[in-house]
Length: 267
Image 1 (cartoon, helix red, strand yellow):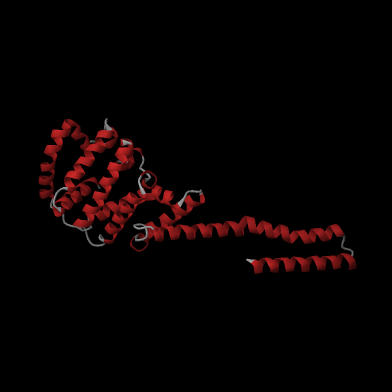
Image 2 (image 1 turned 45 degrees about the horizontal axis):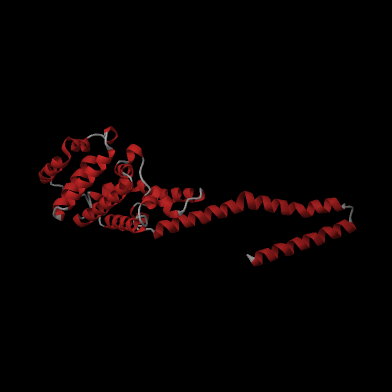
């Protein structure tokens, strides 16, 4: 940077000397010489502010977006596993950074872009990874419910009223657990879909529903309704937490089988 500045100043001084000689030895007027002297400066500034500087800024932001994705658990795995999605995430993150958002907040806003990949991987991952990921999700539901049941509802049904920026709403510790659970799930789900024992899953669900129905009564039927038709969103969140907590209390293989069945039915 210093050497470039020195070269620029030297070139400008040389140009000024040449123009001064031309003014003395030719018919070139002083005001014409000043125009000739200032013209390169004007053109250089125009080139710098209209093209070079914006280009450097775009390059720097793109590099910052790439570094943020490469440094973030979960997202970094997508670079090799889902390159098309990773490029889309990089472009979206760069756009948000140019708009002034901080990387953690921007990544939190973008978390919903991973929903389809995560849902697909839940039916391909090992029992341990599936159960661990859902266990972290339940802790997130509980934390959001304590703040505001509406946040919990939005987390569960983002297609109804928009999702939740977990980076803004949850503690750093819980966000780290979420990122680690997602990364574990992605790393452990590169094979084919796991076989789901549908009959066993139905029997398991029937056993879980009985005590839940005793607690919630007919409200429990709302879990089978379209989310946007649910009259009591706070209850929807609480019932979902109770259901997933009951599933997680099962033996790991039994819980994972039921969770895969639920994911298959929900798409």
